[in-house]
Structures are given as C-alpha cells and as structure tokens.
Image (cartoon, rainbow, N blue to C red; front, side, top):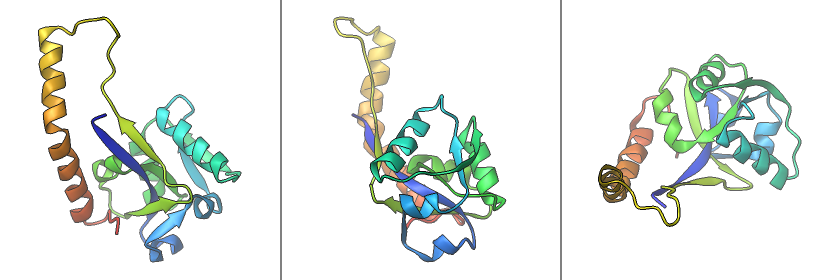
Length: 154
C-alpha cells in the first residue's frame, strides 16, 4: 500500500455544516447529495458508507468526474463526499472540506501486479520510485489541503 486516503465532506462556503469541525454521513444525507456516477470506485465507497450507517440518501445528480462535483457543490446545489486527496485539486472559490465520521471511510492507494509476472525494467523503476516518494507526496497533499484558501480540513 502506498497511502491511505480518507474521505471528507465537500461543502459550499457558508453552508450550515461548515460551522462543525466534522460532519457525519447522516448530516450529508439530510442535504441534497451530489455523487459520482456508479462506474467510479469513489461511488462504491460512498454507497457503502451510507449503507454501513444505515442511511438512505437521495442523490440529486450523478457526475462523471470530481471536478464537476466540485463545481456543483461550489454553486450551492448540494453537498458531497470525496477522498481528501482530491479536494486540493478542486481549489474552487467557495469550497470547504470537513472531516467525515460515522463511519470513517478511507481508501488504500496501492500498486497491483500480476502474480508470477516479472515487471519490465521501466515498470519496476516506476514502482520503486512511487514506493520511495509516496510519503513525501502524501505529506505535500496534506499541506496543500491545510493551506488552500478555500479548502480547510481542521
């Protein structure tokens, strides 16, 4: 495993849930929810989290990519939940990030290889580089999240 990426709530600035240092999946379900489409791995995580919390959520729209989700949330049409590493990439005016609890959901970022297969020299070099650099990349991503003007996760 290279890293663990925790899910966080994505809210528009001034949204009532921004007053809280963290929000729950139940809090998100009480709002119009903007989800990624069913063919994304992120959707699998969000659906599981709502099911684990025994919550039914009404999805108002499904998007093919996270940038679209960010734009819709920034315009105040609803709330969402995305992996924290995605939040700084969508540094749009009007977005706020909050920790998500009840349950805490993380995804593991891994390198997958076929059993019994030898990687090409180039692929082996890439894997070695990623394994070496993963802690630095994660640290930089966390710093970007802390210092982004609109996206804050306390």
